[in-house]
Image 1 (cartoon, helix red, strand yellow):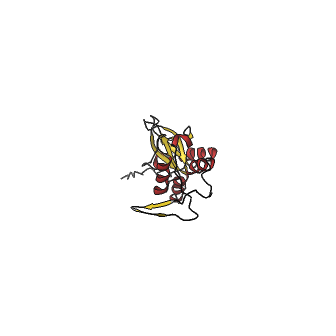
Image 2: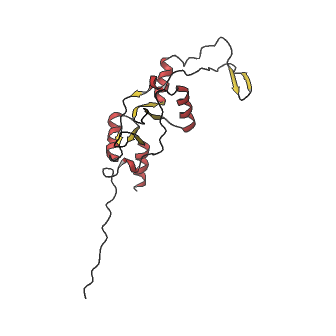
Image 3: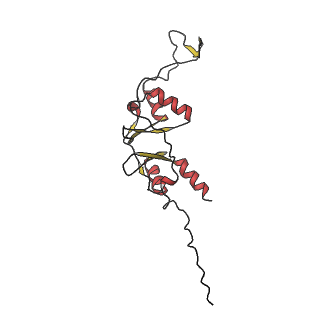
Length: 172
């Protein structure tokens, strides 16, 4: 009597060249619009701990990126980094309480919109592209994250250098 044993095919290990970015990307991406105020973006970055966000058009297609660096450069170029004395003492407000800020405080507003400071022309990657492709694009263009787009070019995720490092660490 002959026994026939069926062998299950061995799974090939995941590799960076065969793993799509869709598998490691962040799917719940917070994006901003060109019309959004810089003050709103700074609040968003501070509250959420973001360092950048994709800028999208009305159809959710990436058209650029805005980063903390963009905001800092904008402030510097506008001269909003001085510690010059102000003519009147600034007032700090906390709820209904207002009190003088005292010496050393420099209060300012942040006028302007994302369109004024964003890096135009979004460098994107398709969701079926490999992790290696994403790493290569990030290295060549010296960026820390890439918006991931669908076949229709709409934003479906964001892959960051940290996403790639985390994925590599889990392979061990």
